[in-house]
Amino acid sequence: MRSLSERRSMIDKKHEVLSIVKQCELLDVCRSGLYYEPVPESEENLSLMRQMDEQYLITPFYGVERLLVVYVILGYKINRKRIRRLMGLMGWQTLYPTPGTTRIDPAAYKYPYLLKELQIERKNQVWAIDITYLPMKKGFLYLCAIIDIYTRYVVGWSVSNAMTAEWCTSIVEDAISIHGKPDILNSDQGSQFTSAVYTNFLKQSGIKISMDGKGRAIDNIFIERLWRTVKYEHIYLYVYEDGKSLYKGLEWYFSFYNDERRHQSLGYQTPKVWYEQAA
Image (cartoon, helix red, strand yellow):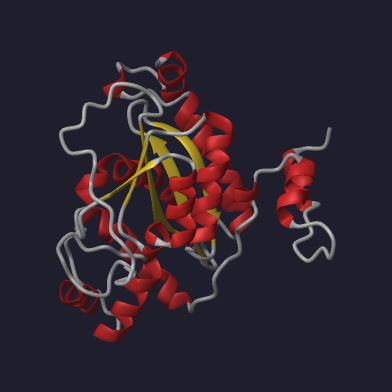
């Protein structure tokens, strides 16, 4: 049996007969692992975006004006337009209502937040999904992950160079095929999660759609904590050259996170043990 990396390398995205979906089925490869290509930016912009990523974990309430002051003091020759463009690339969501920072589709229907005062008592009752920015030495990618809130178990993840609804939907679909479907799936109001592609799939699967209030990352606090953990315990400790090395590193880390990392909130058990023992 060939290794996963060998089988993944056999996928031909330009094959004239077999679709990517069919090739993945034949080779037993998860589709969500195929979407990694570095995005070109100047070295200065990549350095600035790396610093902005770390800054967001410290001050997620900063907007354009405060960031401008921070980076002018640090010596960058920068203006509001450039800050705003980089915030858009990174998917920066300031924690107060402000236009232009969350890629929200104004025409899309927004779903209510269903988790307020909800008692979460079992696995697959509620999943949360989100996207975050990942810096690399020569580019950046986006990470999308799904976490089971009751057990903190990461049921699905993938990296991509574009935040598309199709990509997010494929991750949910793969997670369901492995772990079964949740009762509720919570997200923010990003355009990927309000799109017809994504919402129609959840409806057809019988999954209730829950969405955070605008500018309220605390509504999705568990996956926000996951981002902080992944970045401080792994991403910031390594300088990945490209998407392939980043993907392999995340494969290792999420295996460690689920199978070995003990959580105080779980009685110092691992998410895998908690997930397998949960009802």
